[in-house]
Amino acid sequence: MVGGSRPTTIAVDVNPATRAVVTGTETYTREVSARLPRVAPEYRWRFFASRPRAALGVDAVVLPFRRMWSQVRLPRARC
Image 1 (cartoon, rainbow, N blue to C red):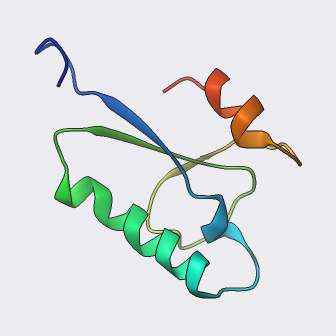
Image 2: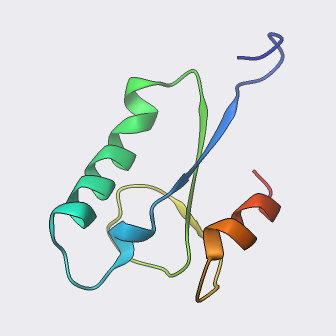
């Protein structure tokens, strides 16, 4: 917590977990993102992806954008 007022917000790119073909990277992203709020509840977690995917284990905000979405759209997202 910064300044004791409200929790620090951390934005996480969960885009790998939304891919159609599931390999190690996709599984790792899904598993880590699902555990983050439990192991660090003092932070406010916001998960973002450029496309929707069911059963991510987190509530992800979808910011549609084909290329470089995390560099262009993520900084402008409201956390």
